[in-house]
Image 1 (cartoon, rainbow, N blue to C red):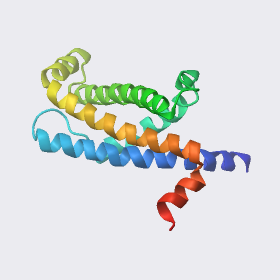
Image 2: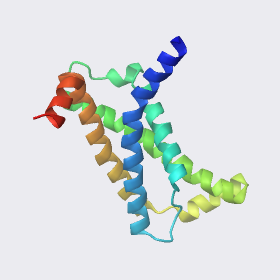
Image 3: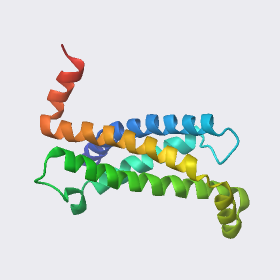
Length: 162
């Protein structure tokens, strides 16, 4: 019974973050597909679901580290900027690893995968996608920080009740 309550609490804690990143990564994947139809690797729905779940859990674990409270007594904008920057770095790393894994799965050789990764690396596309990620992360962190300050019930009232 105790395990069930723990799992329920964890699932309820991760679900909103997972949904946000699932939608965000689908928007980013669509952007990649529209910008360059045949260049690079495009993620499947399974890849996106896995990435969203991974990022959601990593960010929730990251929230418990002391580095997240680097600017605790500063105005809210500093916390939003700091957390957005850290989350942005994490999402960048995860996206690059996922792309490399795709190349590795197709070649089954680390050096060939690295060569394919470098050949298909498109700096302009990477910068555009990272700009998307940063914008979405700033929205995400702003909403979370406001919910902490205003309390979740107040946020629900503001958005969903008259």
